[in-house]
Image 1 (cartoon, rainbow, N blue to C red):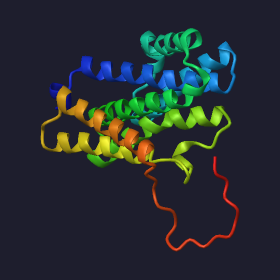
Image 2: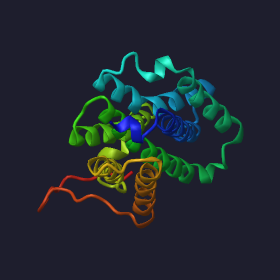
Image 3: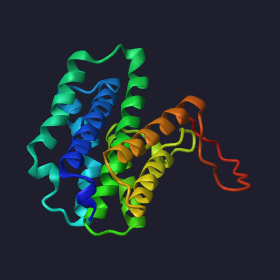
Length: 220
């Protein structure tokens, strides 16, 4: 069984770490949008817990961990308080949002995939739910901040692909009975670095083949 290789403490640690870094990204975006302290806290909570909440509802882990573990709920508030008092200068906020978001993406694709497998999903379904866990909070964050989610924008650098790669590494490790703290960490770092490289070199997914639309395109 997976829990023999991937201990509950490691799973919980991945969850909390992912919650913290995603909450940081949500709170920083709220600062950039000039939200008040309540808005900063709400965006931090939604960004941090949205993907995990969706995962838990799908696999039947109810009540979801976000409502049964006080640490899951308090961690985003601590991140929001940290950002409220110590946020970087305005010109650096966008870069900070992207870096923390990339870190959360890497951690959550691993945590989501492993937990889905523990609850009986197959390897492909577990990877898909790992992806949903990783991108769900970011999508909700962007929607609440009145932005088109990065996941859906053609003019944004690769977002889902790094999470897919991280989830794929996890399921391959499960398949070959080699999932442990080291290999799960490698999967998270791979997704994180791939997302950073995509932002650095502006790697983007292709659009429709032979697309010839004459409609004006909005570049944000």
